[in-house]
Each structure stands twice: as structure tokens, then as C-alpha cells.
Length: 401
Length: 228
Ligand SMILES: Nc1ncnc2c1ncn2[C@@H]1O[C@H](COP(=O)(O)OP(=O)(O)OP(=O)(O)O)[C@@H](O)[C@H]1O
Ligand SMILES: [Mg+2]
Image 1 (cartoon, chains in turn blue, red):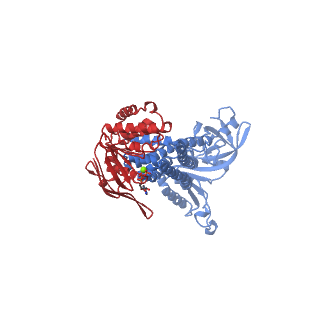
Image 2 (cartoon, protein in one colour):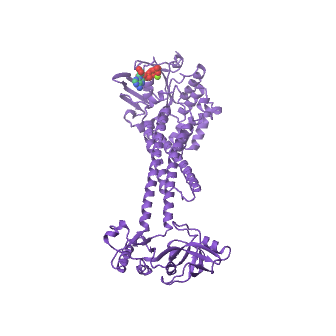
Image 3 (cartoon, chains in turn red, orange):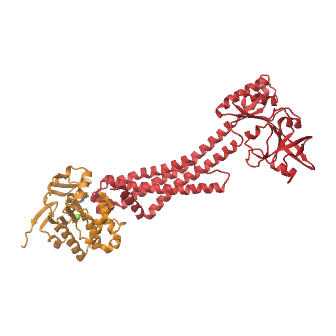
């Protein structure tokens, strides 16, 4: 028998029993689309969280003053004194070849004024590397100039809201404004886009770290952000940081080093597991669809006993009869899966429209796996009914009217 | 063409044995026309099924054109059936979702004949069997006589050597039954070996060779010479 004839015979049989065909297509489609939409959701959530963390900077190591309790016994018992982190510490950290950028951070608030207008605004003191580390963008002008960390250049970068509130419609760039009792020239405006966890870039003034230290009248840093060239180098850099600071702090390890990757990885794992779980649950509906296909094919075989008997009387070999029924099952699951694929794509598209923050898209592995499983179950569960059809005794089969 | 030797067919139902065919000896020559009659349960259908290789005898030998049918495997038996044997059933056994034309075409499709040749042969048969107007209709839209004509066209389209009909008129009225027998006899005149199982003596008496089965045995096998 020709392949084309086998396919069109199977298609004819499917068309001959519309209701059951439609129901089976539906079952298969629901299974496939459920897998796709649920994984799209899980994957979307994962990507959202990963994206948020990535906006904090990649390959980032954060150095905090003071030893965290969990990193080693209670501080009081050891009897160590916590030394401040200084800009010299930050400069020292830069010496490792795998360290690409270092941004010391000082934070505080201070009154910022221009003419008669004054606002109390969060101030960050840092270095030129901060822009790249935090993936911020400039709307106008430049970020802080590259210079030694202890140079208090009187320049500042302002956020959009601060600029609007102080300067209104006047161009902010090049103006001199007053922060506390010092004067700073505005060299740049931060772009609003590029949200960042924990920091509102619109309401912010950034000055060189030495200037901020002078403003706040302190030597100590809030923290130091260290960017590492590759994620593989992170452990080495971590050790380097601990050793360097210990050297500089009279042999005491009074800092905490947190890696961005460690946090991110945990979240990534959690969401991955979540996605697999919902995918697994959805896959059950695929198995159900497979079993449904088997049942309906079995019913179909017994409904069409006389037809099978006739095929045998016409000299059709058992293998061909088996092939005909298998083709039917395979076509059913193929169409069902394709239908599910369309519904699933549409569903994740709709999800992405409803929740724009969530980049919901079924990962390729979920699409491939659900299609594969659909076809496999269809054919697998089609084998038994097809065998049964092929094994029918033609004489008995033809007794039925 | 056909030789049956010592054919037995025993069905086991539970622990009971039903001897449907006890010891059948039969020879059928190429191009012969014979009818089989006999009381219900005498084994006529069983014999026909064995002749058509739909069923295997419990014991005995079946030779078809020098082939030992009983020793063939399933696939070879299917091939022999496909090439040499046509069936006509009491209940027509048309495929309900296919049109008359498609039902007639089915054996050619199964045999893998090229579509162009299929169309040609089907058109010829549809015309020859007077089904042109009904060709695109499904079986449920056809009368019993028309259905049986479709079934005969389907059996004949592969040009088999032998045609086996089990009570082909059993579900038809007298007129359409007569038409069906006319068609079958016409096929026989063109060289087909024809075996008809029937309960109707009028039909049974039309063949020159008449077999009577009783209780699983060939009770009588008479050849009526012309003009007696
Ligand atoms: N599959 C089977 N299992 C058990 N017994 C069977 C089977 N098929 C036929 N028989 C028995 O074999 C015997 C012969 O049956 P068969 O159908 O050949 O008779 P028949 O001559 O065709 O009868 P009818 O004229 O009623 O069609 C009967 O006694 C029947 O009950
Ligand atoms: Mg019978």
C-alpha cells in the first residue's frame, strides 16, 4: 500500500468519526498547551528574578564592613573590633588582575539647593566605575570622572526627579548647585530607564566618594562593590579580598564578602525546580491524553471490527492493518499536539501582554518535550489497539453486520 | 485448480468440540460454477471460509494451483487471497464512510495500484455494474441490491481467479437477488471460478455442479449434464 494512501485512509477514518476525533484532539491540545503555558509562566518568573539581579551587576562581589554572624562565631566572643572600610582599602582591592572595577560606596542624605529651591536628597558617593557596575545609563552629560578615589572633585550627577524639582525647565547641565555647605557642578543626568533593585535612580545625587566623605564627615565606607572579569575568578577574588583586608586590618577578618552569583544561583535553582514541577504536573495531562487515545482507539477497533475483517478478506497483511491504525493514532496526536502548540503559543503571548514585567515564553525544551511526549504517547498507546485490530480473526470479524 | 483432501475443522467451545467439517474431499476446476446447499449448521460457511483462506482447517490438505496453502505463512496467505480470491458476503460489508466508488476502489488501494490506473478501472467497473449515478453515494444511501452490486464490483475489480459468495441474496428481495445472480453468472462466463452458498433452491439449481452438505460432510456432489 502506498504511503499517501495509508495517510489518506487514516485521515478518512478520522473524518468518519468527527466527535471522537475532536475530543481526542482537544485532550491532546489541552495537555500540550498546559505544559507550554505553565512552563512559560515559570520560566517568565525565573527570568524576571534573574533579570532583576543582573541589573544589580554581573559577577559582582560586595564587601561589607563587619563580620556577619553566620560567617563565623559571634563577634563579641572573639573580642575583635570592627575597623572601618576606607577608600585605601578599595584602592588596594583593585590590584588583583581579575578585578575589573571597584566602586566604593558612601550613602547619606543631605540638603541640595539651587537658588531658592532646596530638597533633602539621598546622596551616593562613589567612583566612575559605579555606572558600569550597576548598568545605569546617562541621559545627558557624563558620569563621575575617573580619578584617584581620594580626590574630592566638586562635580555631581543628578537623577531626573531631582533635576526637575531643582531646575524645572532650565538645563541642569553645567549649573552649580549646593550640597550641604559645598558647591558642585552638574556634569551629568541619569537616565530613568534601567530599574534597579533598592535604588530609585530618579531621586538621587551622585558625587565622588571623597566629596561624600567630606560632606558626611566620615572616613568609613558603606560598602565596596567589586566587579570580577569572569564568574570563574570569583572564588579567587574573594580570597584575595579577605587576605588583603586582613593584612590591612592588623590580621583581623572583620568584613563580610557576599557574591552576587550565590544569591542569584539559589533563586535560579528554586525557579528552575518550580518550572520543572509545573511542567511535570502538566505532563500528567499529556499522559491522560495518551490513555484517552488508547481507549478511543480500542473502541474504534471494536466499532470497526467488520471493517478490519473486510480488510483481511481483501488480502491485507496484518502489518499493514496495524500500520493503518498506528497512522491514525499518530496523526491524531500530531494534529492534537500542533493545535496545543498554537494554543500554547497564543496563551504565553497573552500572558506576556497581561503581565508585561514577566517575560513569559515557553522555553524550547518545554515545547520540544511536550511535542515529543505527545507523539510518543499517541503512538505508544496506539500500538495496543492496532495490534488488537491486526490480530482479529477475520471470520469472527465478518460475522458482525 | 483447487484440491481439498481430508479437511477437518473442529471448533472448541469451552471443553466441547464442534466438528463443523468432518472429512471433506473436494476438487474444483478452473472456471467451474458450483453451488453449495444444505441445512443450517451443516458447515457451508466454514467450508467457504477455508476455500477463501480466511480460516485454517484443523487438519487436511489444501492445494491451490500447486501451492500447499496450509503450509503458507499468514503473509503469503494474505497475498494469495489478495491476488486470486474475491468475496461476496450476505451483509455486503461495505465501509460506511466511503462512497460506492471508493468502496470499489479499496482493494486496488490496498494492493498499491497507481492512482491513475485505479481511476480507470473503477470507472469501467462502475459503468459495467450500472452504478454510474450512485457512484458518489455512501452505502447507507443505496438499496440492498445496489449495495451488493458495489460489493461484487469490489470483489471483481482485482480480477481474481475465484469468487466466493456466501448467501449473496440472503438479504435481498427476489428481483434484486435475481439481478445479483445474473451479474455473478456473467462474471463466471468471462472465466471466473464461481462458488455460491445459498438456501434458495432456485439459485442452487442454476449451476451445473451442485454440492449438498450435511452435518459437516459433502453429502452429494452432482454434475448436471446439459439438457436433461
Ligand atoms: N467460531 C465458531 N465457534 C464454534 N462453533 C462454530 C464456529 N463457527 C461455526 N461453528 C459451528 O460449526 C457448524 C457449522 O457452521 P457454519 O456456519 O459453517 O454452518 P452453515 O452451514 O453456514 O449454516 P447457515 O446456513 O446457518 O449459515 C455449526 O454447528 C456452528 O455452530
Ligand atoms: Mg453460513
